[in-house]
Length: 161
Image (cartoon, rainbow, N blue to C red; front, side):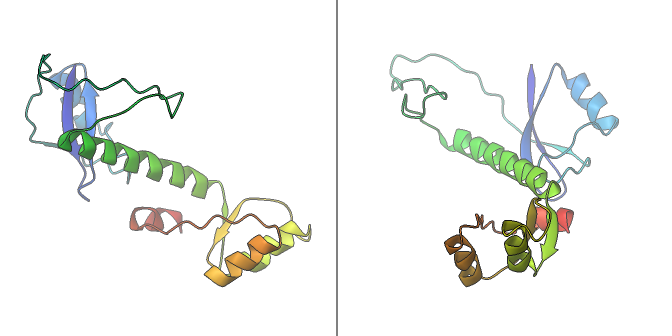
């Protein structure tokens, strides 16, 4: 198994796992590789150093985390592990946000009015998104209307308008 560090023109960095170098080159040549953040198929292999895992009796023992039980373990990360995890979390978050945004209607500045119409059955029930003020969002919550504030991120902004 070959693991390569990859990047798109926007410098989103991520890992690719391939059965061989040839497999990577074939997929890259056919445009099959895509950035998990922006979906660009212009992917470049980044320089990377091989990592060889070896056991050490002087290493610190860390209990294995049970991901099905959030309180059931400890996870320790080195600097490079932390960077990789951060990139994976960012990619997963952006992918989820794209899916969420793609399944909702953009009502723009009319968000608060449309949310009230839906809540009071004056408009058909559906998922909507848009912009409103913090005060207006709080007023919606006080009326029992569920509102989730999400920052608009540049990587999403261009793909969701």
